[in-house]
Image (cartoon, rainbow, N blue to C red; front, side, top):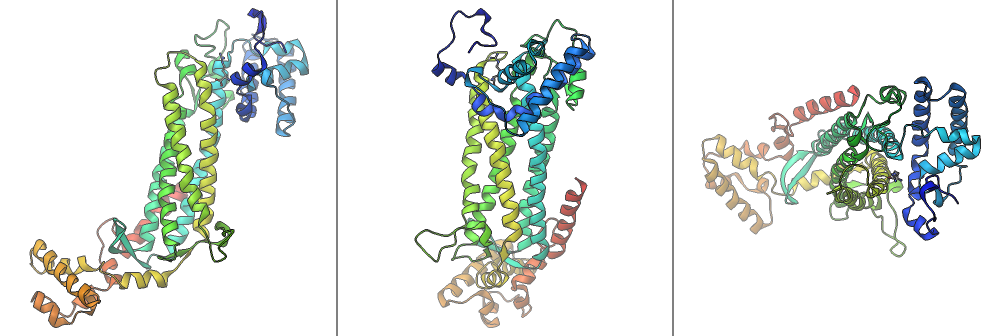
Length: 459
Ligand code: ARG
């Protein structure tokens, strides 16, 4: 097949070389963006008097026909036509004849492909922001029901201090809130039009870049044509924001996996988000949470891959940059899939409040309460720490907890202790009393819930 760029060539590459060169296998995902870019470009060419209005009409008709076909998945592409841009141009010429060849006036594939990717990411980032919101909503729904559910809080995966279970869940709400902010902020840099930058140097045709940008819904144009066709940092930023988000999701996944284990039994995941074992009939595995955790790897990989592709590349376009796409597509699909799964998984999980209550009553996570109690009564905190540590040791020796120690034993350890200590040692009281701003105290958690809801309704 003769190439659209074949004029200067005496020989065509062999098929296996074409295979290596081609990106149509994956960049066909940009078909609608590419057509959208062409519509804006040719409209602008007409308005600027670069193409005659009947030519513009014909080309627009051809593009509309291709769009219809694309939406029905009826376009046939060829590897010999390399990428989505040349394939569509080829199909257009096939459809409307030689006038189709005028579409590429004052444009290069270099500004064309960059435009497509800006359009693609604009859409995906909007969808991702909405999906983050749906996960946040599911967290809020659960948190609202568990403000006064007391649970063990951990450091080093060792029980540390009792907390409100809602407080734990809401920690993830705020991580996702920052992720949302990062994606929203990145829009400023995605929402730019490279179209009209040409191959690298602009064009001699009297085009109007602002007009094509406006037609495409971009807020502004790249100020420098070389930057416009060389920039891929908007994609790196996307991959980086995605990496941060999947990192948060993978931490949350890990907790879901631990919490749903036989050992913890803090939550039960819905059947719809679990799977069974092919051999062990009793198993209910948290596969979805594990997959979200596992898929984090590929997203990090794509970030590192593109950073490496671009490192040391001279200006302007280099074919290396064709390697920017698969990672971008895969990251968008992976992240959207993970967020969707997550929203459903959290929404439908059951919290085992009895089990949480038991856990928090049968441990030493109230030890800080006793130390704080002593310190509040004037015992230097270091000394109080030592006294309580020794009492914990006594309890461990006897197989009991602090609340089981008789008042006499407690008073032997420190004479400032009175019988109000037993209320202080209750985990529910321990949580309730943590009223410092942003703390786990119930009224603080309620305040936090209110702020979280405001964030959701503001967007
Ligand atoms: N398929 C190419 C890419 O994805 C399009 C741009 C090609 N430009 C060129 N001058 N060869 O990067």
